[in-house]
Image (cartoon, rainbow, N blue to C red; front, side, top):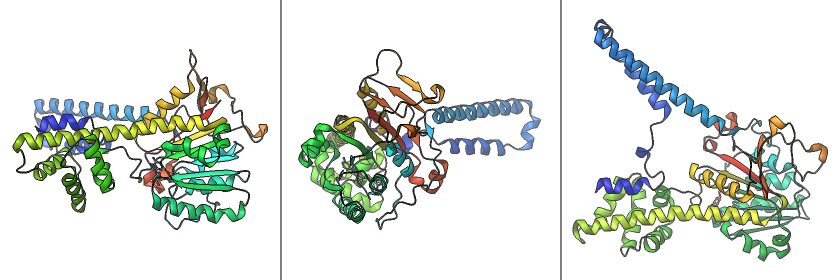
Length: 413
Ligand SMILES: C[S@@+](CC[C@H](N)C(=O)[O-])C[C@H]1O[C@@H](n2cnc3c(N)ncnc32)[C@H](O)[C@@H]1O
């Protein structure tokens, strides 16, 4: 049974830390400890010496492998060189201690675009939105949305506080899921959907319950009713209400963080009903429900990215910040499929070519966008970040939450 559950859960991304490989620091520490614990008398024994050498060699090999993996990872991204805090002059009206991730980098992404319209798909505390509104006095139409009514209300207050100095700006905000971006734009102003918007931002966030993709988050963070819905609709579990209550109660004691935790919960919740077969079947339905919910979130993200790209005006840009490797992979792959690369390689390494190809600029002389390192050209657009931009070392130090953030940007033809 345990094996069966384990197999089932492996396909649910990141439910258990125990399933992940140990971090590099742990392996290094382990290597150091094992070396230190060897005492001098072991060296007197030739066989022990040989064993020791072999062990050392294998530890060195491990270290080299870890270093190689780290270097490879470094290569697949572009660490931002932007000075952290260089956008500090912007006015923020949020009373939260919220630091928008890669704020300067996001502002740079849109700085050369003449922004008449901008959509923030994930308002949050309106940190990015506030900066972009202030950086673009030419902005005429602003649309913001968030699924969370509390976030929406706070963001609305921040945007309102900026409107005194942007009197010509039409700013509308909605409690809405970004998957409805096209119908929302059609309601706001059909012309906006017809001509397309100049820029769209999606900050998928770490803290957001709605944007996370892990079964663990569904169990420990999602609203009670949503947990119940997942069990009922995706698991077709008749005992969904009892399980929902148990799952929510478990949060008081720290939540559910492993396969075993969830199996124990199901077992105790179904105790006396249907014996062994009963709880195993229930557990299977629960795991199935979680898997479908996670996949559903991923599909929604892919569909939403496509809807955002379709909503862009020619030359418009879509920037997405993700915090999870699964999300980032979807952003990367969806961008590639959106642009439709011609046969042959669409890659353009800007640094090698020594030129930039940004069509829509405020000022042709100002076309140098130093944040762009390498692009991928396609029939329908250009990926401006062949490798994702990651926060500067300084930002990572000051804001731990930013560490896993990746920024990818696409421009429509
Ligand atoms: C990290 S926060 C955004 C922070 C924001 N960029 C700022 O600077 O303050 C992510 C936000 O996205 C919202 N969100 C998550 N999934 C969403 C969805 N599918 N549609 C709309 N909003 C969503 C969350 O409620 C959360 O407020």
